[in-house]
Structure formats: C-alpha cells, structure tokens
Length: 314
Image (cartoon, rainbow, N blue to C red; front, side):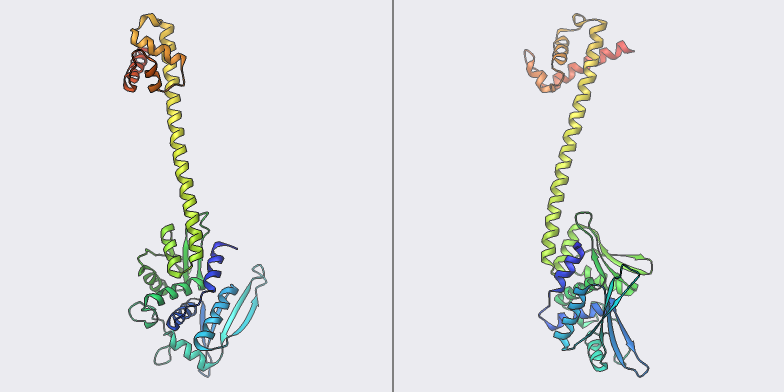
C-alpha cells in the first residue's frame, strides 16, 4: 500500500463527533468528486464517484450518521484501465438529496445548484474544526501525497480555478503557503515543503501518518548530515594529500638541483621531515622540529621551498 493510500485509509476510519464537521466533510466530497443530477420532472439526486473503497465507505457512513440516509452503492469495472473499479454512491430520493444539498450549502433559495465555499460567506466552514474536516474530505476525494522516502509533495485536484482558490484559502488559514498550478484542464492545490506537509497532516488529524513522515524526515536529515560531514572530511583529506604531493615534488627538485646543503638550515630540516613523513600534517611536522614550530611557521617554510622550486622550473 502506498503512503497516500495509508493516509486515506487512516482518515477514512475517522468520523468527527460534531454534526457540523460531518456536514463540512460531506460538502468537500460532493464538491470535488460528486455530481448532482436533475431529471425532467425536477427530481434531484446526488452521485459520488471514487475508485477507493475506503472513501466510499467513509462517505456512506457520513451520510448515514448525519442524515440517516441509506445510500445506494453500485460498482463499475473499467476493462481498459487494469480492470479498475469505480464505486458509485447515489442518493436517489429527491427529498433526501434536497436535504443534503441544503445542509452543505450547495443549493440556493431558488433551488439552483451553487458553490459558496469561501471562508467568509459559508457557514459550513466558518469554524476551525469544520475547515479541518473540509480539507480532510477534499483530500479523500481527489488528493494524493508522495512517498516521503523519495520526495515531499501534497496535492488536491480541483475541476475549476474557483474551487482551487477556495481550497487554497482554507488551507492557508492554518498558516501554510499552498500554491495552485494548472495541469491540463484541472487546477492543483499543492504543498512542497516537508514541514508544511507535516502541518497539513496534523490539520487533517492523520496522526499515525504524521509520525511516520516525521520518522522519515529525521532519518533523511541524519543521513544528509552524515553525508555532508563525510564529504567535508574527504575534501579536506584530498586537499592535504594534494598539497603534500606538491611539496614533495618541490623538495625533490631542489634536492636534485642544489642539494639540501644549498638551502638554509630551517628549510632543510622541514624538507627532510616532509620526505620522511609524507602523510604528516603541518602541525605534526612542526612538533618534530627542534625547537618545535607552529603550523603557520611550517606552512611558511614549505611555501619558501615551493617558491625556490618554481624559480628553478622557470
């Protein structure tokens, strides 16, 4: 099971205790993956489509607990897409459909279908707990989240820019920075940062998934820290080795051209030590001298030897 499916499975088993939160979650599901049909006799019915059985179960349970409605369930198999199943939940009774649509504020006073999911005007999502439930329902309907082992990405797909902007406003009311991008004919509300995805899981109250994501983030951060330290140490070692090789080459050249007797005693001593201990650090070389010399003093002498060698090369 993918991480996204795990999150949805956890959320599908969570039923809000407050009726107003249940209505907010139903409103999100109907808004994003539902359809309202009106017959020639002006009879209303509501259909919800999903390929996830956990979401179908959650929607069925919400309607039963909130409105005491028994929803009709049918299954449609797609023979072209790996024989995937689509679950269709239908509220066929006209009066029950009207009751649901009025409760979720999708039906106007003149019985026209409308959507006012803004934070200011819609009583369904004025409370913080209802906004949490609305986001939870929206994610169950058309959302997905990437495997945190690979990268961080959270998104909810909307059919129109109006729905995307409304959902973006609701998410950002929790101090997040959701963005919108158009993908073909759809509009995607998304979050990219790991910390914000942790926050949105907390908002939706997916606490088990949140802990799993935090564990992955901690391990990845530790791994990255170790890698940075190893890379830094490797770079320092390479730098030290390359410098030592260059110093030995310079000393060999001076030994060949003028011999050690042709250079001052201080330079001669450090040259002989460098040849004898090619892997020693500057600090270690300075400690072997009599009297001992500091790291900067050793570096100064080696640089003078290098300058002499460069003169001979020129």
